[in-house]
Each structure stands twice: as C-alpha cells, then as structure tokens.
Image (cartoon, rainbow, N blue to C red):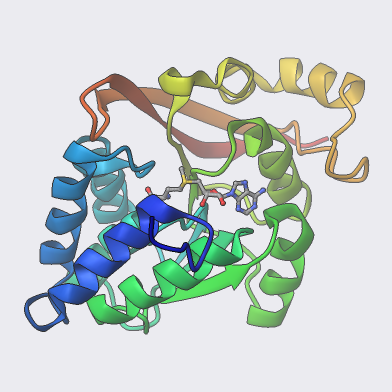
Length: 251
Ligand SMILES: C[S@@+](CC[C@H](N)C(=O)[O-])C[C@H]1O[C@@H](n2cnc3c(N)ncnc32)[C@H](O)[C@@H]1O
C-alpha cells in the first residue's frame, strides 16, 4: 500500500492522476473537471458534480457576483467550476474566497487549482469557517458577499449562515446556494431558509448559535428559496437549495 502524504488516499490518487496528465490539463479547467468527473465514476468523491454544478453555474451566470464565498474547497472542483464561469463573464475583480479546515485537502486543491490556471480568481483560506471568516473579510475589505456556496459539513450550514447574517455579509441581493440538501440532507437548514422572518425571529431568540452566542442571525432578512434536484456524480438524486435575500424588514 502506498503511503498517504496528505491523509486522504482517494483524493491523493486523483491528484496523482491529474498531475500525470499535466501537459494536457494545464490551463484547461474544463478538461480538469472532466477528469475529476471520470474519476468520480469509479471512486466516491464528495464534490458537487456536473449535474448539480450546472445549477450552481447558472446562479453565477445570472447574478454576476463580484465576491463569492465557498465553504468547503475539498479538491477545488467547484471553485474551478465557478472561477471558469467568472473568467467568461466577469471582469478581473470578481473573486472566489474558498475555505477549508483540512490541511491535506487545502494542499491537494492548491495544486489542482494552480494547474487550472485560475489561481488569480480563487483565494484559498485554511481554517474552520466560523473561526476565520470575519478576519478574512476584514483583511480583504469585504463588506458584503454576492454569492455564498455552502458545501462544508451540513451541521454548520445554519450556524455559519447566521454568522454571515449577523456581521452583515448576507444582505439584500445575496444568493446562498447549499449543496446536499437531500443527500445526506439538511432539513433544519431548509426550514431556516424557507420560513418567514417571524419564524426566524423566534428561532434565533430560542436557539443559541453553537459557533458563538453573539452570532444571533438577522431575522429581518426576507428569503426566497427554491430547490433544484439533480444527480450526484455517483448517480443518486440530490438537491441544491438556492436562496435569495430579496428584502430586509426593520427591527
Ligand atoms: C463536500 S466537500 C466540498 C466539495 C467541494 N465544494 C466541491 O464541490 O468540489 C466538504 C469540505 O468541507 C470541509 N469542511 C467541513 N466543515 C468545515 C468548516 N467548518 N470549515 C471549513 N471547512 C470545512 C471539509 O474539510 C471538506 O473538504
């Protein structure tokens, strides 16, 4: 058995495969994504995949975000997918800030992103979202996020969204896309984004945010939310929830 360098043998196998085809793949994001898709048919790889990815890209195309936050970089698949779309439709200032707390995944994705030629669009941050997102935002001078892609551990979806709401990064016009809302599922999150402000006011008052009680959330944000059902790379039916903040109630 080969020794694991980053603690993730499957993702390392993918990295080795991609690096072995470096000449053909360098500067070709779509070919890299296709390579990861092919690999994913044989070995389980936890990325958004091409089918749900189409819905994610459609949101990027539609809303033309300048600032994207992605929670969960993993191998860099969805970062590359969104950055390739930014490259087509947005000026050079449009950027993705992607976060991952796992150093092994950080290093694997760093190499795949570098090979894609899209490092100028993708800023990687190593750490747990709730521990670093405020500092990153302050350091980068970011006061609002246009599109958030939630794709980290599902039990962090509500807590990290409440954090972003509290510090004002989610505001009118922000779109929040959340992966895996059917498999493995995120019923609490769906209730949170689909319920009216009055429900959220009660929820936020009664439910302490595990990532910090000061991150109560902002109940007055009015959300419109829709699910897009599509298959995972492995062929199971899953969903991407797309939530748009369409207004803000005072209070
Ligand atoms: C499903 S994968 C992301 C897949 C990626 N978005 C894609 O489609 O290519 C989830 C990733 O989230 C990271 N993660 C989980 N919880 C996190 C947290 N609280 N902060 C930062 N990263 C986290 C994991 O280390 C893992 O790499």
